[in-house]
Every structure is written in structure tokens, then in C-alpha cells.
Length: 215
Image (cartoon, rainbow, N blue to C red):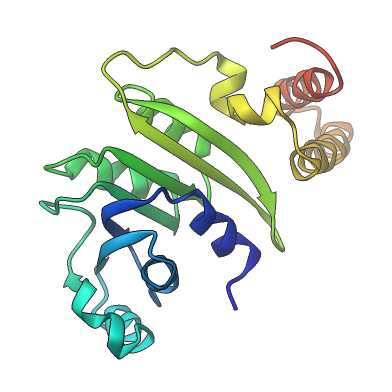
């Protein structure tokens, strides 16, 4: 059974001909995409040969003819319609995309940190079509993007929190903001750090928007 994080990630993957599961680890997302016929074929890619062996073992025999297993760092020269890059730092995701020789038409990204930097990098070439935060033990950002010749420019708050989170806030996102507000308020009372005060101000502005304000 998939975790809530992986199930949500899979729900964001569009139907496609070739899906790349980059940094696939156990290959749960790619294998489930094959089982549900979301993708005709899946390329499982991981820099770790041990992880790739686990992905191969987890992929049922009857699906192996639709699967390719590649031990490599990132996308490199792979060609695919959509790439899932999840469970790693945002700067690592950016590095993978920067080094890709063929950018996929669609991206489904889940950075563990540095989501703002991912949004900023991706929005140079892609239009972010979905951007949400979910809770599954901790909070995760889920970003879906489609390649675009003239992507819209995001505001500073949209880069930091995600446009969808601000315009259509979920219970998980509001819960995240409230916990951030409490944490930052406590830190500010103990140290008076201006950077913390600035971050708290942005969190409270996002909260105000979620409660009925304007972006």
C-alpha cells in the first residue's frame, strides 16, 4: 500500500507514453503507474545500483516488458514525456533538470526542501499547473509543471508558498502555515532575529490571503 505522499504523487502523473521515475529508489511510483496503465512504458533511473535492483524486484514479471532500468545520475540523455522526481532536495532536483539533455514535456516534482528555488528555476521554462502541500508525517510540496514558451511570472509569495496553495488553500496548507507561525513566533521571542521576523511576516501574509485576502 502506498503512503499518502506517494499516492498523491501518483495521482498527479498524467497519462503518458513514457514516464521516467528519476531517483526511483524502490520504484513504487513507476510500478504503480504501469499497473494502472497511466504510462505505456516506465524508465526507472537511480544512481544507486542497489536501489535499482529493489525497483526491478518490486516490478511484477508481467510488467517487465514495459519497464527499463537504468543506473545513472538523473535524467541525463533520457527521452520521456513526463518525469517524476521526488524525495530529494530541491537543489538536487534543479541540478538534474539543468543537466538534462532532453527536458520532458511534463514534470511532477516533490522537493524535500528548497521548494521556492525549484519553483523559480522551473518557471523559467515551465508553467506550473498544480502546486499543493500535503501532510504525511511531515509536510510535502507537490509541483506539476508543463513546458511553456512564455510561462507566467510568479510573485514572491507565489514562489515561496505556491500559487495554488494561496488561491485554493487546503486544510493541510493552512495547518502548515499555523504551525510555522507558532514556531517562528516562539523563536522570535527568544532571539529577535530580523530574518525570522521577515519570514514570520510572509507566513502571516499568506495566512491572511488564505482567510479571504487577495494575492
